[in-house]
Image (cartoon, rainbow over all chains, first blue to last red):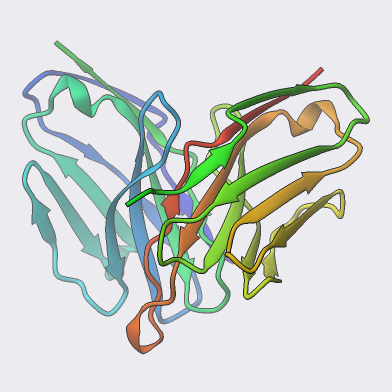
Length: 114
Length: 116
């Protein structure tokens, strides 16, 4: 079965705090792709990052960083020094190598309080 | 470079009616996927079109059908609308990556469908 779990439904932080969004996935495929998307109130999903299953190197992009751990089937997303503009719903997604379907989690709603 | 565009932005229909939603993919993309996103939920895969054919389908009834045109644009049709079809319908485009890998999907702004 293919599944993505985002256990945190809502998170609120004060501006400049760091915040980590959790993502746990399930797949039987040995090759797969993981993604994070941001959905602001406007509704459009904005691509943030893709990670291949054979590349466990963590990545940092500005205030964003991602921690991929195959041993725990997790792909967590950290925002450092959060800003009000980071307020949005964040989705983690899985694309197994078999098939073309993306499986999304239920999302984590992040509110950054000024 | 235009991104993924969808029309209309909003739509209100009544139960039993039929609706057609439209999507134009990002320039250079040849694959279009459709998703249904209910309020407070993640997007659910409806189907994907490539080379004018449905390549894969999610767990949606036959009331949901689609089409892809030679210019890669796509339509989503929903017949016999139910109240439960009220949702944000998202279109995403992508292109196959090099070496058999797959690239990220780029999403449009969505069409908000309300069924009364």
